[in-house]
Image 1 (tube, helix red, strand yellow):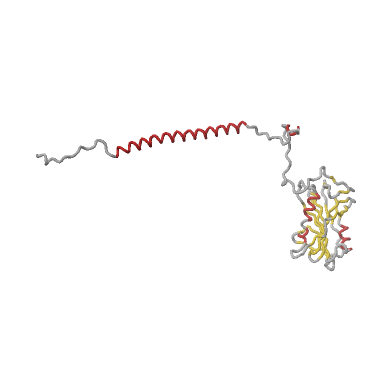
Image 2 (spheres, one colour):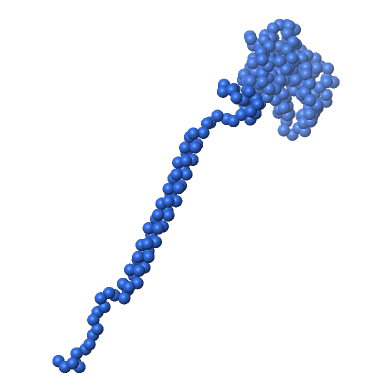
Amino acid sequence: MSPRDYEFRPPEPRFPKDSETKPAAEDAAARRRPRGLVIGSVLSGFVVIALVVALVMLWGNSTEPVALDPDNDAAETTEPTESAPEETDLIGPDATNPPHTVAPGDVVPIDVDAYFPEDVTLVPPELGDWSEQQIINRPDQFTAVSPDYSATIEVWQTSVFNTPQSDEALTHAQLNRVSDECSSGSNVTQQGEPVVDTLTGTDDTKLEVLVSKVTGCNGGELWLIERVMPLTQVRFHIVLWDAYSVADNEELIAMYEQVAFEF
């Protein structure tokens, strides 16, 4: 073989060209990764330490309330005190303490809670020439209508639950529903605040009641007389209605004055 026929080829490089740059880049990346891991580990350690410190401080604090008035000796006592009742516990005033146990001949005001140990019964008036009517949804109610149907009297005794409210508070609550005694188309107008009246028992016991007066009820005037006694679990319910004026109807007032109670 002649020298010309020999093709000169340089020897293969010992290291590829890429190997000149890749190791450098890999070395730089390798140097960066450990540094980031170290920083992250340090930050995580600080967070863990802070949480541990916070938990230790919370567990170590006292749960006793701080007195609002350091000069008040009562605030420094460790004896438990009874908390005040919430507003939702009672709707009205507390019942009077102690209640009044009614005896024959007593006078029981509306602001004193009445207790009849042997129960009490509301007694309706004599029918006379008035006609009695039956009310389907109130079968125990006494209802009488005048001969010309211009006046009506209703006498009804119902039961109530024993509650911590006073006679006066519950009686006012019933009077607030006076419009329920009128038809839905009535234009009811209140005539002042409720007034106090008295029912007399068969043994001359006096029991105060409250009277609410409205006009525009079924085209006339209506008086609602109530006394609610939760300790006895009894409610007295009396209604007087006149096409013009209850007070001017002497016969209707006479019927009302005959209403009594016995125990």
